[in-house]
Amino acid sequence: MNMDENVKKLLKEQMWYLATYDQEPNAVPVAFKDVTEDGKLLVGDVFLETTLDNIRKNGKIAVSVSSGSTLEGYQIKGTAEYVTEGPIVEAFKKQVEAMFKGAATAKGALIVTPKKIIVTTPGEDNKKEL
Image (cartoon, rainbow, N blue to C red; front, side, top):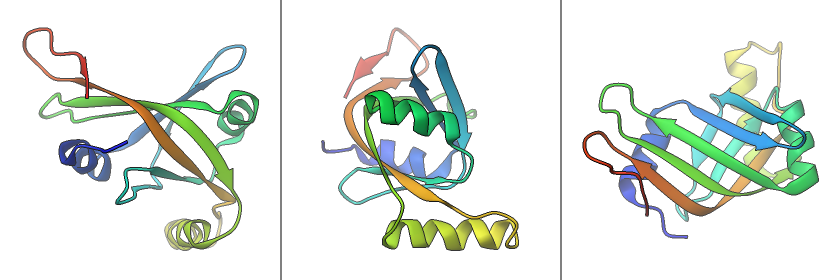
């Protein structure tokens, strides 16, 4: 899926919220994240136990991001896979260990493949799919 540059920009600048579900919804903020050139979303796993349990059961995820100052926001729905080794995981390990001064580490990473992007902007009814 080709991702709009406005979506990528907001994803790089703001905190993300991941939503998954099994028997009940689960939402969690994430700080260790990135967007690839081809529009995949990467999330470092530090404290994602329930999220990972839900991903293993159905593979579905939604990522929400917004700007408090402009009220621009996006919801990205897609599928996720979990990896425990490779350059993505190593990059997150370095980030997490530096921030927590060795007290925590990244155990792996989610790779999210977007299937649908929904945009919400202030003003008239502007909820639409990209």
